[in-house]
Length: 361
Image (cartoon, rainbow, N blue to C red; front, side, top):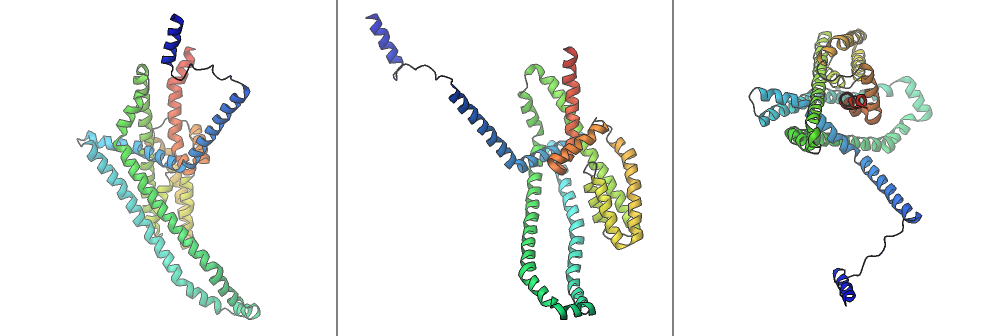
C-alpha cells in the first residue's frame, strides 16, 4: 500500500514520467557541439567584420567626446551648466566644419570651372596644330576620338560623376552621424562611466575609477594638444603662404592643419602637397614652401610638441612610433589617430596593475 502510494505520488509530481539518464557524451555529440561552437564563432566574426565601419564610427565619436570633455569641464568651472557648456563646444565644432568647407570648396569649384571653360580652347589649339592635322589626315584621329568620347568616355564620366556624388553624400551622412553620436556621448559621458564602473567588483571600484580617470584625462589631453598643434601649424602656414603670395593660402593652410592631425606622416604629406601646389604657380614659391615646411617641422617636433603634450600622454617615442604604425596598418588613418592614446592607456594599466602583481608574486 505504501509503495503504491509512493509511486502514485511520484507520478503525480511528474505527469510526463520520470526523466531518463542524460545522453552519453560520445564522440558524435562532442563533435556536434564543437562544430556548433566553431560556426557561432565564425558568425560572430563575420558580424564584426560587416559592421566594422559602424564600430569605427562609434569608437571615433567616443574618442572625440572624451577629447572635448576637458573643454566642457573648463567652461563648467567658469560657472556654466553642463548643457550650456556642451552646446558652446558643439557649436564651435560645427563652426569649424563649416569654415573648413567654405575655405576649401570654393577654390576647388573655381579651378574645376576654369578648367572646363578652357577645354574648348585646348581643343581648338590642338586641331589647328600642323602635326595633328597631318596625323588626322593620315589616320582619321578626330573621328576616332569623337567615337571614343561619345561611346566610352562620356558614359564613364557620367558613372564617375554619379559615384563621386554618392561618395560626397555618404561623407556628409557619416559626418552628421559622427557629430550626433559625439553629442550623445558628450552629454552622457558621466552616466556611461558610472554604469561601466558598476560592473567592477566593489572592492576594486575605487582603484578602477582612479585609473580610468587618469586614462580619460590623458586621452583628453592628447586630443586637445593634437588639435592645438594642428591649429598652430595651420595659422603659421597661412601667414607664410599669404606673405609668399601663394594662391588659396587659407584653403592650403586648412589642409595643412587637417593633415597635421595624423601622426608621423600627416605633416610630411601636407608639406609635400602644399609645396607641389605652390610649385605649379612658380618655382621660387615652391622652393620657399619646401624650405619653410622643413624648418617648421623641426621647430614643431623639438619645441612645440613636447611643451604641448607634456601633460597628456606618457608614452616613450619608440612605443609611439610602433603604436602609430600598427594602428595605421589595422585601421588606416583612424587607427593611427587612436593608437597613441590607446598605447598610453595600456602602458598605464601595465604600470599600475600588472607590475605590482608581478612584484607580489
